[in-house]
Image 1 (tube, rainbow, N blue to C red):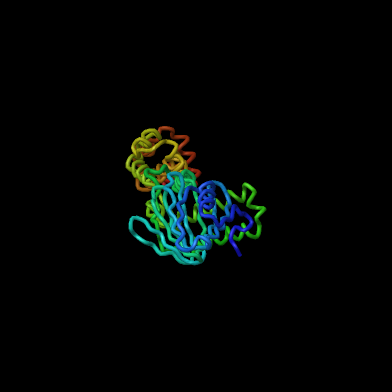
Image 2 (cartoon, helix red, strand yellow):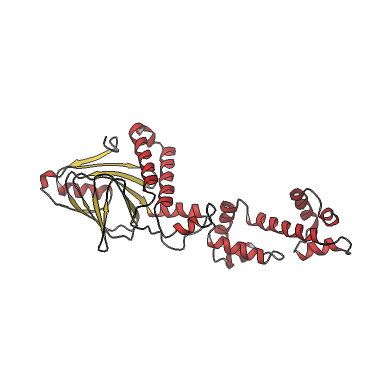
Length: 320
């Protein structure tokens, strides 16, 4: 069954017409027929989601395809059946069933597609994908996102996601005209692409297992811990980490499920609690001195937070 059959764009056996129509829907392509021109039978279907467009492309002939470089989009070419070849910087990557290549906006490449090659081309707006990555990482990107062109790992997971989206387009095409479904499928494709296809942020995303902390958040945590008795203001903290206050606040909330103020307060509570457990209540003014040494000036409010966390007053911990 032809993918995206409910979303046809055009069919053509004329190479000039096919090139013009492809340029209208995607971007300019130079197409050369390897065999007889009469064998050309372009079948082009497409579906637009939110910042993500899917195109099923079948040429019906062996063709050499040279897409123009596009600075605004990522293009993911997934082979559904048949075989082809991607050429980049003199390197040739053979593609078979279920293989995927990811062309970043800066990637200049060409393709040779056999007459039996059926493929799904996914165009993703650069700002949409990089914005999604920044949201996942809870930080601003310090460099452009760039994918490895060809990868053999994690292909089955990516293909399963593609198959699911194509099934929705086949069995419930009316739902794909609704904004909630478009948004859900777009976010699924964006997340799965970033998780399964290697890129220059992959290592940072997977660092420390399931919990990934952006570099600026790690620096912030280290700085707070080193200055817990005199914690910095948000402006000072952001300046030290070379980021914005807004980005830092968002990073704490997304990665630690706490605001910076809550994180600092909890850290000070723990520090005071450990100190109180080690000190003797026989020392005159011990409690007040300990709190002041930890930068606590509002003793009443701190005692309220302390009791809520540990179930007792600071003085009770000191006297125990």
